[in-house]
Length: 179
Image (spheres, rainbow, N blue to C red):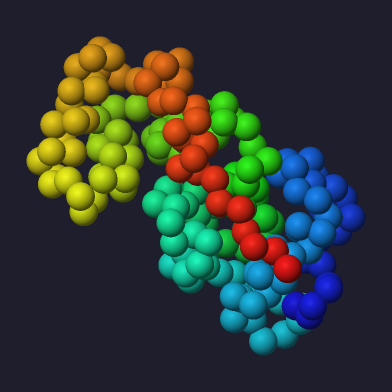
């Protein structure tokens, strides 16, 4: 899609503005970034961006949790299209409050949509954050200690208690260098 053209109707863009807190200019800049990464050869189509390609964006290199967010929006195909790409960056932007980021992280980790997190989800979270600094065994011990302290399952309220909002916000905030 050419520079300046939009992937979105006015209605779609207005909805994205509301959902992400981005300005129209920020959405336009994200669309430009998207266009550079999309391998489509025609201005009226899109092949999408594989999660692995998206993760090569320099600003994402320091955000270990960005892949979780990208995988959420990429679905089974692990490909993000224009709308999902804007939502992806919206979830990582500083426009979201720390509390929204804690709730968003809980939803990301609750892949089975059970309303609580178990050892597997928490292990994956800690593994992402602490590898390669800690061994798998040490990460397993940390996970088991946490689950023992909270009674085995972590619902959203417990999650909010054990995860400092400022820390989650710090780990889930990436501001793109737009224009």
